[in-house]
Amino acid sequence: MYSDTIIAALRELIEGYLQGQGLVLVDLVLRREGRNLVLRVLADRPEGGIDIATCTRLNSELGLILDEKKIFEEGYLLEVSSPGLDRPLKTRGDFLRCLKREAVFFLSQPVRDRIEWQGVIKAVREETVLVERSGEEIEIPLGVINKAKQLIKNI
Image (tube, rainbow, N blue to C red):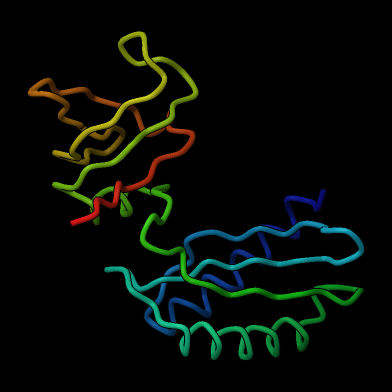
């Protein structure tokens, strides 16, 4: 495991760089895979939709920044990619971006005796997400959402 200090420093550095590019950091994962140290960065536009050319450019530029700052004492692999259509919903802003869309929620604590909910995001409040399912409204506290993602339906 890597210290919270290293993760926080990476997050701050990468978020700052991405914001300057008009992008957002969706997720950051640092872990050892076999002998390799791998840093995965998921980046996107605030409204969604980042292309491969942008990911390639970000990979090169972030690699130079990380090497210049000497964050790692050993070699590492850097992977910058798009979160894809089923981008995880983590922040209040993510839920706001998906208003009036269907999502699935996996909770750490039951809400109305269930730990999994699916429905349309009707509103996002300071501490909760209001979800409608079969005409019923459920208020889910942001703090109990382990994982959530927008459902993509085939047309």
